[in-house]
Amino acid sequence: MRQLWIAVAILGGMLALTAWNVTVMHQRVQPIVEELHQAAAAAREEDWPQTETLTQTIRTQWQEQVPYLQMVHAHEHTDEATLSLQTLEGALASRSPGEYATAAARMAGTLEIILHRERLTAENLL
Image (cartoon, rainbow, N blue to C red):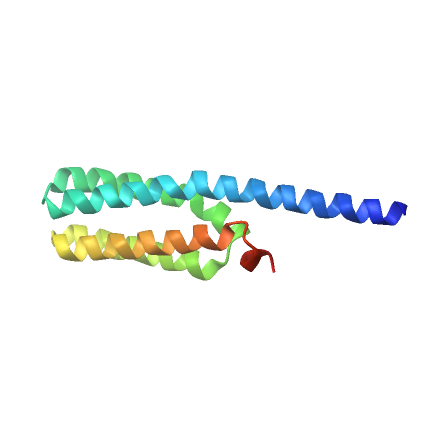
């Protein structure tokens, strides 16, 4: 009977850590998604100084999160988001509102996939 309680405690600890990770991931990634939407809106309005400021903020936030994400999440999505950021910066340099909005949507989509894959759902747990 003691072994059963040890197993239950280990399982409970794993679920608690998983729930904690979901919360941390959301706190780390969601602000970047929001900044991407704001930057895309600024680019559509051709407010390039604001777009540059937001892109710099996105770059800084992303670089701070990459080590954590690479430790707890699949590298392919982290790498894809990093490539999307580079595309975003290229679109900013070319001052193309459509290209920038597309790159921002692609990066936001990748970040949403990361968030979705970390949620506590039966699909993700099994």
